[in-house]
Image 1 (tube, rainbow, N blue to C red):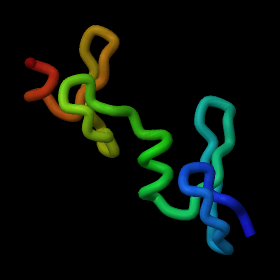
Image 2 (image 1 turned 90 degrees about the vertical axis):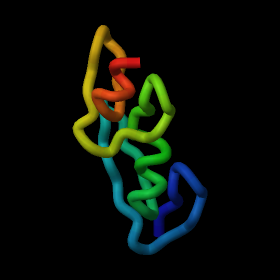
Image 3 (image 1 turned 45 degrees about the vertical axis):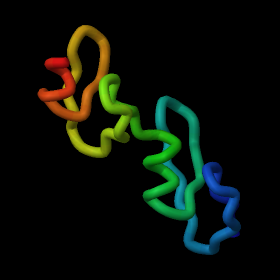
Image 4 (image 1 turned 90 degrees about the horizontal axis):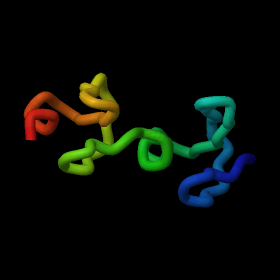
Length: 67
């Protein structure tokens, strides 16, 4: 079994993701999102879709990017 990098759960159906050369182990997509997904520069929500970038910052939507 494998230990989740986010919550520490020991789970037989864990999976790994590699981002920027680092491999992480997770027991759920929820944990993967909490650890790896970027946060909106305005509202702080995790960006799990496309999002938008302006001036080097990442936002969840155009509304947040406009603020």
